[in-house]
Image (cartoon, rainbow, N blue to C red; front, side, top):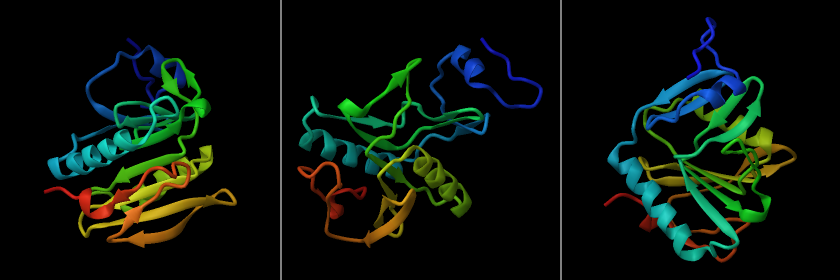
Length: 184
């Protein structure tokens, strides 16, 4: 098991030697950030969205991951995110050392009331830096989904929807009725 250097940061190599845990965590600029477990409304939105993708995508072509995997943004300083949902075209996925080192075509982040604007912007900049072409920040309260598309290296707002159907850019067969994703 690796021990953290005195600075409180961890390198990619040290991180690889650390044991897997059941904790939700991200590493940002070498700092390990343990995140609390999702509350039930948050978890239900993730579950409903994941099920909708699983029903509509061909598993030979696309793969859907929940926040139980590491998406390496950069090795130095180490930054690894755990998006609530990441959808990949399988042929574009790059795995190394048991982690994903390539941009998903779509990232969905279900936002908690405690998340700060600064923290959300930090995640979006990380997703931009690896070329994630579409991000959906989902806000259960008030209920709406923002669709951000990568244009000229920046994620820009395309639309904010409180109702209607979501159609991911890279997965044209998928249609998600927004009214069906909110917790019961």
